Length: 266
Image (cartoon, rainbow, N blue to C red; front, side, top):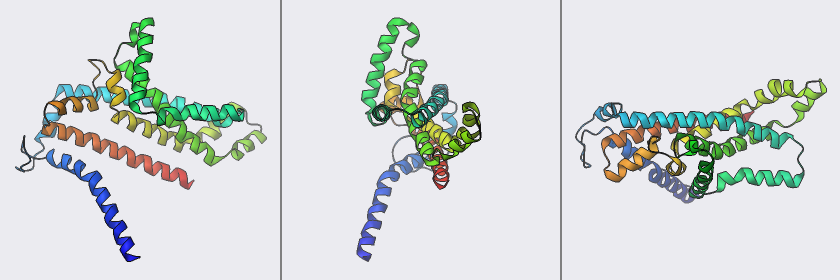
Protein backbone atom coordinates (compact mmCIF):
# COMPACT_ATOMS: atom_id res chain seq x y z
CA UNK A 1 0.00 0.00 0.00
CA UNK A 2 2.84 2.37 0.86
CA UNK A 3 4.53 1.65 -2.47
CA UNK A 4 1.31 2.46 -4.31
CA UNK A 5 0.90 5.73 -2.42
CA UNK A 6 4.55 6.60 -3.11
CA UNK A 7 4.09 5.85 -6.81
CA UNK A 8 0.94 7.96 -6.94
CA UNK A 9 2.73 10.80 -5.17
CA UNK A 10 5.67 10.69 -7.58
CA UNK A 11 3.29 10.59 -10.55
CA UNK A 12 1.32 13.56 -9.25
CA UNK A 13 4.49 15.56 -8.56
CA UNK A 14 5.92 14.73 -12.00
CA UNK A 15 2.69 15.77 -13.71
CA UNK A 16 2.58 19.08 -11.84
CA UNK A 17 6.23 19.73 -12.67
CA UNK A 18 5.62 18.93 -16.35
CA UNK A 19 2.70 21.40 -16.44
CA UNK A 20 4.08 24.30 -14.44
CA UNK A 21 7.87 24.32 -14.80
CA UNK A 22 7.69 25.87 -18.31
CA UNK A 23 5.42 28.60 -16.93
CA UNK A 24 7.85 29.23 -14.08
CA UNK A 25 10.69 29.42 -16.62
CA UNK A 26 8.84 32.17 -18.50
CA UNK A 27 8.40 34.14 -15.27
CA UNK A 28 12.07 33.53 -14.42
CA UNK A 29 13.37 34.93 -17.70
CA UNK A 30 11.01 37.92 -17.48
CA UNK A 31 13.16 39.28 -14.63
CA UNK A 32 16.52 38.22 -16.09
CA UNK A 33 18.84 41.08 -17.07
CA UNK A 34 20.03 39.10 -20.09
CA UNK A 35 18.31 40.11 -23.32
CA UNK A 36 19.29 36.96 -25.21
CA UNK A 37 20.39 33.51 -24.14
CA UNK A 38 19.73 31.44 -21.03
CA UNK A 39 22.48 32.88 -18.83
CA UNK A 40 21.36 34.56 -15.60
CA UNK A 41 22.79 38.11 -15.39
CA UNK A 42 20.87 39.50 -12.45
CA UNK A 43 17.41 40.55 -11.37
CA UNK A 44 15.67 43.42 -13.17
CA UNK A 45 12.19 44.82 -13.78
CA UNK A 46 13.27 46.84 -16.82
CA UNK A 47 11.42 44.53 -19.19
CA UNK A 48 8.16 45.24 -17.41
CA UNK A 49 8.87 48.97 -17.56
CA UNK A 50 9.60 48.83 -21.28
CA UNK A 51 6.50 46.70 -21.72
CA UNK A 52 4.27 49.52 -20.48
CA UNK A 53 6.10 51.99 -22.74
CA UNK A 54 5.34 49.96 -25.88
CA UNK A 55 2.35 51.58 -27.61
CA UNK A 56 1.64 48.50 -29.74
CA UNK A 57 1.38 46.29 -26.67
CA UNK A 58 -0.80 48.84 -24.88
CA UNK A 59 -3.09 48.98 -27.92
CA UNK A 60 -3.30 45.19 -27.99
CA UNK A 61 -4.04 45.14 -24.26
CA UNK A 62 -6.83 47.67 -24.73
CA UNK A 63 -8.36 45.61 -27.55
CA UNK A 64 -8.13 42.49 -25.41
CA UNK A 65 -9.83 44.19 -22.47
CA UNK A 66 -12.63 45.70 -24.60
CA UNK A 67 -13.19 42.38 -26.36
CA UNK A 68 -13.32 40.42 -23.10
CA UNK A 69 -15.54 42.89 -21.21
CA UNK A 70 -18.11 43.49 -23.96
CA UNK A 71 -18.38 39.83 -24.98
CA UNK A 72 -18.63 38.75 -21.33
CA UNK A 73 -21.41 41.21 -20.52
CA UNK A 74 -23.50 40.25 -23.55
CA UNK A 75 -22.86 36.50 -23.27
CA UNK A 76 -23.67 36.54 -19.54
CA UNK A 77 -27.02 38.20 -20.24
CA UNK A 78 -27.86 35.86 -23.12
CA UNK A 79 -26.57 32.76 -21.35
CA UNK A 80 -28.61 33.49 -18.23
CA UNK A 81 -31.78 33.99 -20.28
CA UNK A 82 -31.06 30.82 -22.25
CA UNK A 83 -30.53 28.76 -19.09
CA UNK A 84 -33.72 30.01 -17.45
CA UNK A 85 -35.73 29.50 -20.63
CA UNK A 86 -34.47 25.95 -21.12
CA UNK A 87 -34.82 24.87 -17.50
CA UNK A 88 -38.05 26.56 -16.46
CA UNK A 89 -40.17 26.49 -19.60
CA UNK A 90 -42.12 23.20 -20.03
CA UNK A 91 -40.53 22.09 -23.30
CA UNK A 92 -41.41 18.67 -24.72
CA UNK A 93 -38.81 16.05 -23.83
CA UNK A 94 -37.47 15.61 -27.37
CA UNK A 95 -37.24 19.35 -27.96
CA UNK A 96 -35.50 19.86 -24.63
CA UNK A 97 -32.95 17.17 -25.56
CA UNK A 98 -32.38 18.84 -28.93
CA UNK A 99 -31.84 22.24 -27.27
CA UNK A 100 -29.44 20.67 -24.79
CA UNK A 101 -27.39 19.14 -27.61
CA UNK A 102 -27.31 22.44 -29.51
CA UNK A 103 -26.15 24.27 -26.38
CA UNK A 104 -23.26 21.83 -25.92
CA UNK A 105 -22.05 22.10 -29.52
CA UNK A 106 -19.97 25.33 -29.07
CA UNK A 107 -18.30 23.67 -26.08
CA UNK A 108 -17.27 20.41 -27.76
CA UNK A 109 -16.61 21.63 -31.32
CA UNK A 110 -12.87 22.22 -31.97
CA UNK A 111 -11.94 25.90 -32.05
CA UNK A 112 -10.54 25.63 -35.57
CA UNK A 113 -13.89 24.34 -36.92
CA UNK A 114 -15.82 27.00 -35.04
CA UNK A 115 -13.48 29.73 -36.29
CA UNK A 116 -13.80 28.56 -39.88
CA UNK A 117 -17.58 28.60 -39.53
CA UNK A 118 -17.38 32.19 -38.24
CA UNK A 119 -15.34 33.19 -41.30
CA UNK A 120 -18.00 31.73 -43.61
CA UNK A 121 -20.81 33.42 -41.66
CA UNK A 122 -19.13 36.82 -41.65
CA UNK A 123 -18.30 36.45 -45.33
CA UNK A 124 -22.01 36.09 -46.04
CA UNK A 125 -22.95 38.98 -43.73
CA UNK A 126 -20.31 41.17 -45.37
CA UNK A 127 -22.25 40.95 -48.64
CA UNK A 128 -25.21 42.50 -46.83
CA UNK A 129 -23.38 45.14 -44.76
CA UNK A 130 -19.71 46.25 -44.89
CA UNK A 131 -19.73 46.69 -41.10
CA UNK A 132 -18.89 42.97 -40.83
CA UNK A 133 -15.38 43.42 -42.23
CA UNK A 134 -12.71 41.63 -40.14
CA UNK A 135 -12.17 43.60 -36.97
CA UNK A 136 -13.18 44.07 -33.37
CA UNK A 137 -16.92 43.83 -34.02
CA UNK A 138 -16.55 40.42 -35.67
CA UNK A 139 -14.33 39.27 -32.82
CA UNK A 140 -16.89 40.36 -30.22
CA UNK A 141 -19.72 38.57 -32.03
CA UNK A 142 -17.64 35.41 -32.43
CA UNK A 143 -16.65 35.41 -28.76
CA UNK A 144 -20.25 35.97 -27.67
CA UNK A 145 -21.31 32.99 -29.78
CA UNK A 146 -19.17 30.46 -27.92
CA UNK A 147 -19.14 32.18 -24.52
CA UNK A 148 -22.94 32.11 -24.25
CA UNK A 149 -22.95 28.31 -24.17
CA UNK A 150 -20.44 28.20 -21.29
CA UNK A 151 -22.43 30.73 -19.26
CA UNK A 152 -25.68 28.87 -19.91
CA UNK A 153 -24.18 25.58 -18.72
CA UNK A 154 -22.91 27.10 -15.48
CA UNK A 155 -26.17 28.95 -14.76
CA UNK A 156 -28.25 25.89 -15.63
CA UNK A 157 -26.27 23.78 -13.17
CA UNK A 158 -27.11 26.37 -10.52
CA UNK A 159 -30.78 26.19 -11.48
CA UNK A 160 -30.70 22.42 -11.09
CA UNK A 161 -29.12 22.86 -7.67
CA UNK A 162 -31.72 25.23 -6.25
CA UNK A 163 -34.66 23.27 -7.68
CA UNK A 164 -38.15 24.54 -8.38
CA UNK A 165 -39.64 24.33 -4.87
CA UNK A 166 -38.76 27.89 -3.87
CA UNK A 167 -40.26 29.33 -7.04
CA UNK A 168 -43.38 27.23 -6.57
CA UNK A 169 -43.66 28.57 -3.02
CA UNK A 170 -43.39 32.12 -4.39
CA UNK A 171 -46.19 31.32 -6.83
CA UNK A 172 -48.32 30.03 -3.94
CA UNK A 173 -47.82 33.43 -2.29
CA UNK A 174 -49.24 35.12 -5.43
CA UNK A 175 -45.92 36.35 -6.81
CA UNK A 176 -46.17 37.22 -10.49
CA UNK A 177 -43.50 36.26 -13.03
CA UNK A 178 -41.62 39.57 -12.89
CA UNK A 179 -41.52 39.70 -9.10
CA UNK A 180 -40.46 36.06 -8.83
CA UNK A 181 -37.71 36.56 -11.39
CA UNK A 182 -36.31 39.73 -9.79
CA UNK A 183 -36.73 38.83 -6.12
CA UNK A 184 -36.37 35.05 -6.06
CA UNK A 185 -34.77 33.49 -9.12
CA UNK A 186 -32.03 35.99 -10.00
CA UNK A 187 -30.77 36.48 -6.40
CA UNK A 188 -30.45 32.71 -6.05
CA UNK A 189 -28.71 32.52 -9.42
CA UNK A 190 -26.21 35.29 -8.66
CA UNK A 191 -23.30 32.97 -7.68
CA UNK A 192 -23.80 30.92 -10.84
CA UNK A 193 -24.08 34.02 -13.01
CA UNK A 194 -20.87 35.46 -11.55
CA UNK A 195 -19.04 32.15 -12.01
CA UNK A 196 -20.26 31.90 -15.62
CA UNK A 197 -19.22 35.49 -16.33
CA UNK A 198 -15.72 34.93 -14.94
CA UNK A 199 -15.36 31.75 -16.97
CA UNK A 200 -16.45 33.61 -20.12
CA UNK A 201 -14.03 36.47 -19.39
CA UNK A 202 -11.14 34.04 -18.92
CA UNK A 203 -11.95 32.19 -22.14
CA UNK A 204 -12.10 35.45 -24.09
CA UNK A 205 -8.88 36.73 -22.54
CA UNK A 206 -6.92 33.64 -23.56
CA UNK A 207 -8.56 32.90 -26.91
CA UNK A 208 -6.28 32.77 -29.94
CA UNK A 209 -7.79 30.64 -32.73
CA UNK A 210 -11.16 32.38 -33.05
CA UNK A 211 -9.57 35.81 -32.65
CA UNK A 212 -6.96 34.96 -35.28
CA UNK A 213 -9.63 34.06 -37.85
CA UNK A 214 -11.84 37.12 -37.21
CA UNK A 215 -9.32 39.87 -36.39
CA UNK A 216 -8.54 42.85 -38.58
CA UNK A 217 -5.33 44.86 -38.98
CA UNK A 218 -6.30 47.26 -36.18
CA UNK A 219 -7.81 44.74 -33.77
CA UNK A 220 -4.79 42.75 -32.64
CA UNK A 221 -5.09 41.26 -29.15
CA UNK A 222 -2.41 40.17 -26.70
CA UNK A 223 -2.49 36.46 -27.71
CA UNK A 224 -2.17 37.49 -31.36
CA UNK A 225 0.67 39.88 -30.54
CA UNK A 226 2.54 37.22 -28.57
CA UNK A 227 2.14 34.73 -31.43
CA UNK A 228 3.46 37.21 -34.00
CA UNK A 229 6.36 38.28 -31.76
CA UNK A 230 7.41 34.73 -30.95
CA UNK A 231 7.63 33.88 -34.64
CA UNK A 232 10.35 36.56 -35.00
CA UNK A 233 12.32 36.28 -31.76
CA UNK A 234 11.50 35.60 -28.12
CA UNK A 235 12.47 38.70 -26.15
CA UNK A 236 12.28 39.31 -22.39
CA UNK A 237 9.35 41.66 -23.06
CA UNK A 238 7.42 38.69 -24.42
CA UNK A 239 8.28 36.78 -21.25
CA UNK A 240 7.05 39.71 -19.15
CA UNK A 241 3.85 40.04 -21.17
CA UNK A 242 3.18 36.29 -20.99
CA UNK A 243 3.76 36.37 -17.24
CA UNK A 244 1.25 39.18 -16.75
CA UNK A 245 -1.38 37.42 -18.86
CA UNK A 246 -0.74 34.23 -16.91
CA UNK A 247 -1.12 36.04 -13.57
CA UNK A 248 -4.42 37.62 -14.61
CA UNK A 249 -5.71 34.25 -15.80
CA UNK A 250 -4.67 32.53 -12.57
CA UNK A 251 -6.40 35.19 -10.47
CA UNK A 252 -9.61 34.82 -12.46
CA UNK A 253 -9.51 31.02 -12.25
CA UNK A 254 -8.97 31.14 -8.47
CA UNK A 255 -11.88 33.53 -8.06
CA UNK A 256 -14.09 31.34 -10.24
CA UNK A 257 -13.10 28.21 -8.30
CA UNK A 258 -13.94 29.84 -4.96
CA UNK A 259 -17.29 31.08 -6.22
CA UNK A 260 -18.09 27.62 -7.61
CA UNK A 261 -17.13 26.04 -4.29
CA UNK A 262 -19.51 28.38 -2.46
CA UNK A 263 -22.23 27.53 -4.95
CA UNK A 264 -21.75 23.81 -4.36
CA UNK A 265 -21.88 24.29 -0.61
CA UNK A 266 -25.19 26.07 -0.90
